[in-house]
Length: 370
Image 1 (cartoon, rainbow, N blue to C red):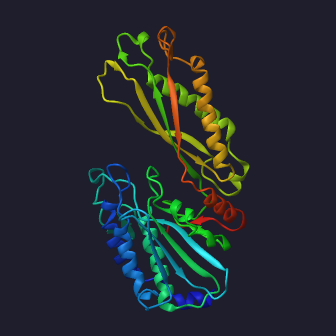
Image 2 (tube, rainbow, N blue to C red):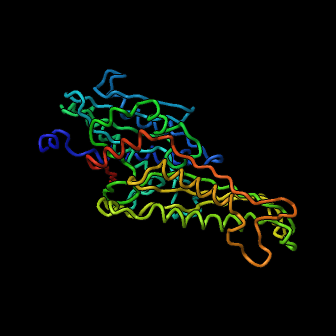
Image 3 (cartoon, one colour):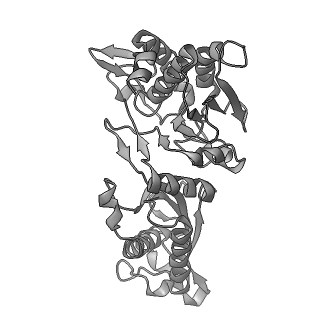
């Protein structure tokens, strides 16, 4: 290890800050909140390629093997490989994502879309989640390409698109897995480089985005007995679903072993309904959210259970708690019943989840933030 450290030396601070300045300068254009904001991750890819191509087989300047993989225009992923000397030995850094969550400049004390330095602090949207990680791993791969250090293990860096939002699938790591481009990473430890915290994180929860669409009967709010209020239906149904979820997926004893900050959770994050007057009970509404499932439970089992909850609520909707003397979810005289339609979205990653479980059981599955 001392020899490796001696050959590699320290990463170049000025080079890192210069690269991060360029990348943070793209943060406005890689905000991920469809349909309003669809990121163009290739803006970040361009800066990473500018750093790495001079040391790549593409230009003949070095050993790095660079593969720019795109499934949507302007939304590329980047797989960078530094070949080792022993067949099958591999170490990978995965998950450095090139999109960010949204930022409203009026809520910030400084410009979030440009890098600024305050003493020892680097400030800007994405410095810790996750553009700073992109710059850091880029500098690492660049250093390997420069020094041509002889390693037994192949080192792979996978920079991904579309991590912050899953409403558009087939863009990032899900598509890479589906195409088998990450299969060989199972041969060695995998470090998932994506945490906004300041210390190593062993293990993380997967996400199942969900939507629950509730339909009732529109009517004037002065005559609520003639309506089926989908807002009330949604609140009561979600309460029932959450209660059942936490009974079926309680905190797992292994979560303490691996230091998970929270157990599996299922909660709402968004609510939408048609425009209308405040004196009008709407005909429908949609509640959206996510399940964060620790790796000790099956994603498939969780999805099946969630669907069971919804099906049983629909079958017994008249038994659901109501709110007030005229609140109801069934109008027998009109043969109308309120209803919940569900949509559960995974990233189609059963093989990727197996990969993570494999790594978690046999190595350390770690995220670094600095």
